Structures are given as structure tokens and as C-alpha cells.
Amino acid sequence: MKASDRRLPADLLQQIRVIGHSLGFQASGISSVTLDTEHARYQEWIAQHYHGEMSYLQRNIDKRLQPEQLHPGTLSVICVRMNYFTQRSTDCIDLLDHPQQAYISRYALGRDYHKLIRKRLQQFADHIALLIGDFGYRVFTDSAPVLEKALALNAGLGWRGKHSNLLDRTQGSWFFLGEIYTDLALPSDQPVSAHCGECTACIDKCPTAAIVSPYVVDARRCISYLTIEHHSVIPLEFRQAMGNRIYGCDDCQLYCPWNRFEQQTDETDFSARHGLADIDLLACFNWTEQQFLDRLQGSPIRRIGYQKWRSNIAIALGNAAYNPHIVESLKQALSNASSLLIEHVHWSIDQQLNKSPDTGC
Image 1 (cartoon, rainbow, N blue to C red):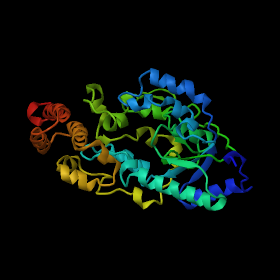
Image 2: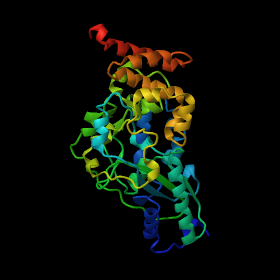
Image 3: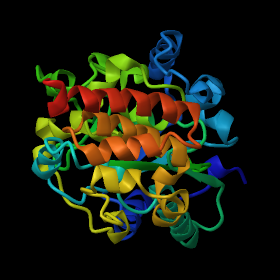
Image 4: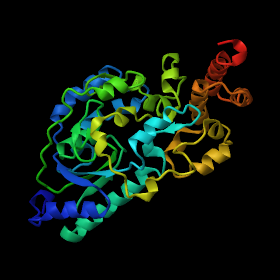
């Protein structure tokens, strides 16, 4: 019997939502595999080179736009979202005004979400199998060529904000997404209407003007991209705008009015580790490579590598108030440094010395 001919329990959709909630997902929905409205949008974004150095985004486009190409037999996609926020937006905004402290995107303060959500999605599929028997599926979370936001949009999990992130009226945008591609023929949910109206807060507050038009982000200008995905020297025009942001950027979410409904997560794995919520810049710049590896074990930050980590922090140190200890640490970092780190350190030293009282600046 084909999966599409399988007789499913009449209340299966309700049971799926109950299962999702029991596993810590705040919402679950069903998307069809039809993403026709995304074809022109995505290909135009690639054609504009807004993906920067992320060459993987221009590969397997057919699999992104046609889920059944990625996982043969897929008829429906179960989409979920899970809150990760552990603080208040006002506290985060306040941290941006303390240039001697490091700002790390709030999603990366705790355990790597990929592992946690993938495990929960597997449990989700196991629970469904207990109800209906074996079925075909594959789980994803920010992995493989999957258009997560488009699928979640179709599944009614939120609307696309002008910053391109998904928004929910009751919980804002501080959540991760995950998917179960399945051969079950499930009825799709309806997309929700958009509620951004005339608001342009995310566009106005972006430090590097990366939101080039409503709903369109030029990754090459985005601090999240520059500090995580960009492996070359960070362009001069963006360095001061980075401030103390050393891994990612949350400004478009911090200033979004819908995040006044933000809700803190119950997932303890997302809580900040090793003081990362407001760690001193110089302290983490002076970590040895072994300390970096040990303290960021299980963290998504670890993937950028030690030299990139220090390179990002070097720029932030250049943006901090003059401190002779900063200058000394930067100079010491020049030995055995990568060319990327050397470039950023020299810039940072110049920035520091220009602010030195001895220069009269």
C-alpha cells in the first residue's frame, strides 16, 4: 500500500500538535511541498549575490524549492518552532551600550540547538510511529538544503517580517525552526496574515543597513554573516558599526515591536554558559585555543574556529574605549596569528591609539 493511501486516524493532526507541545515545541503545523511562490524570490536573491561567500546556498536549488527532490516520497512537512530566548530585550539593548563587554547573539549562548532539536524531532517521529505504524520521514533543523522559513510560513507558524525572520503575534521571533519531511498525506495548515503594517523598526535599526528593502537582506552587509559565515577580512565600512557584537547580531529582533510579547524558554540547555551573556571582551580575547575549545564544547560558536573568534573580538576591542591593557593584548596576539587576525588586530590597535589621551584625540 502506498503511503498516500494509508488510512490515518481522524484526530491525527490534533495528536501531532499535542505530541509537539509535549516535546517542548510551542507550535506545530503542516506545510505542503509546494513552494511555487518562493522560486522567483529565492533565485533573484541569489542572482543579486546577496548570499555572499555562502556558496552552498546556490547549490541544490531544486532540492530547496522542491522538498520531494531532497527526500523522495515526501508529501507533507511537519514544521515546528521552539523558543530559545533566556533574557529580556531591554537587558540585551543595554549590553550594546557597554562596549567593553561582548555581545553574542542570544541563540548561541547555550548548547548547540541543532543537536537538541534534531533529537526532539526524532522523538516526535517515534511518537507518530506508535500511533500509525512505520512511515517514511527525515528530520531537519537548519541543515541540508531546506527553505525553513518558507515551509514554516506555509504551515501557519508565523508571517515573514520585514527583517525576513518569522514572527508570531503572541511570541515574537525568538525561536528555532525544525522540520519532519514525511510520506504521509496530511492536510496543510493555512498561512497567517502579516501584521508588520507600516513599521520599519528593523530596517531603521540595522547597524549596517543590511535590510536593503522590506523582506530582503543582503547578507554581505549583515553582522551575523560577517562574524560567522564570512571568512575573509571584514570590510572597513562595517567595523565600527559592529560595535561589541562578536558573534551574530540581534538588533532587528531587539527593536521589533512584536517582541514585546517575548517569552523566556523553559529549555535549560539554551541558558548562557561560561558567562557568555555579558562576558568581558578582553577576557575572552585572551583565552588560549584550548580554553576556547573547552569552554565552547557543545556550542555553535565553536564551529567558527579560534582565529575567527579572536578576529571578531579584535574588531570589538578597537571599538571599545581606550585601554592600555587592550593595546598590549592586541600586540601580543600578533605572534603566530593568521593573516585575518593580523589585519583586524592592526586596525584595532590604530583605533585604540587614536583614542589615547596621549594623542590629544
